Image (cartoon, rainbow over all chains, first blue to last red):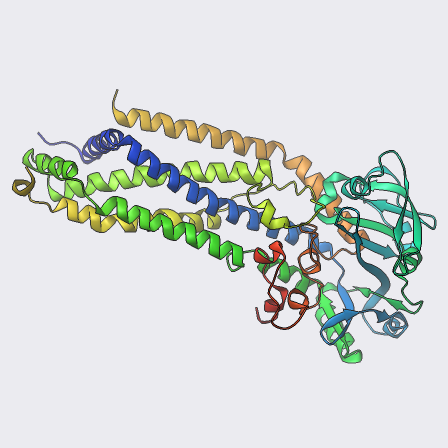
Length: 392
Length: 97
């Protein structure tokens, strides 16, 4: 009787499934470990990919050019009068001074980013979503994120004070609260006027932290940046493209944690897979011998082993990847978050929305399923060529 | 019942779960687009340069605009000690990339 090839493969699949079920404890353990490795790989890839794409879509609106002053490789305040010198440069539509820096809260160990902008800039802001209140409009007024308000322990109050470098106090009043939805960019920000930031940091009147530059024609940004760098050789001129490029490479497999943790997981898995597949038990050898007596060919045994590997690897891939998606989308990558945010006291709500693309799937597949299938080829061949009369 | 039937049922179950995840993602697309627009407005209005993910060290809070030597600022052979430094790639290495 001739069986059609599809029916034959289905029969082999049935037999492979029965065989896997007979050793369900062992195969279940391998499936669980394999799914966990794929979950780790998938979570890391999804998390870094999602952060990268968030940076890509948000930082497309970053300043065209940022000018900083560097002394001995470190950022120092830059003279505000450079703005006047920039005014006559062709292609620049506006330059704005900014004073920003970090404020370490000794009470709870939190770091806030204090951002001081000119009153005109704050007044001209549109589209910034506030949970309540309004943007700062008078001296001493600030807008903060909900996390900062909580960290300052303001409860129902709106007034608070921060220490200046000479330990005198600067008083502020919260006029507005940024929306939680913008936490990924405003999570630790205290926005205030330039004068208030200067007072808080005791910065000299003629100095600012950096200068943001707007360029009329986006195509000319690099040219304008080159001209600025030529006129002020002591400065560091950053373009928006460079800022975005930073985020294309800052997360990824080449980071220490990514490579060490995931390569170690992969290596341990390959060892497990080859160990599982290489050590044929007496019972397994006997089973192959009986199958051969019953008329199974070497190719049938190979097909049987292939189906076993495909079922284990395929199920682990689907389960691991689905769990990775749930982990990143619904739990903000909770397992990796301790490393992602480290000792940060303020932990912004990232609200990640991962989207899987073909390249990610292929990458995870080729890092997990292919090594497993490769690790089982030789053992499958060794089991397939066993002579029936030597084991039965 | 053939064993492959149970396998297909399991695959169907996984497909249904993944399908509902995809459905949930699609349903939230409009709300997400609004949130992204709000974030973009904040970035544009305040001239922000970085994502606020880690707030413990300046080179992971503002990797795009912090000093090139910030991760090893104490002395040239300083060992990185902030946990986020192990996940975030040092900015100093980006110059050649």
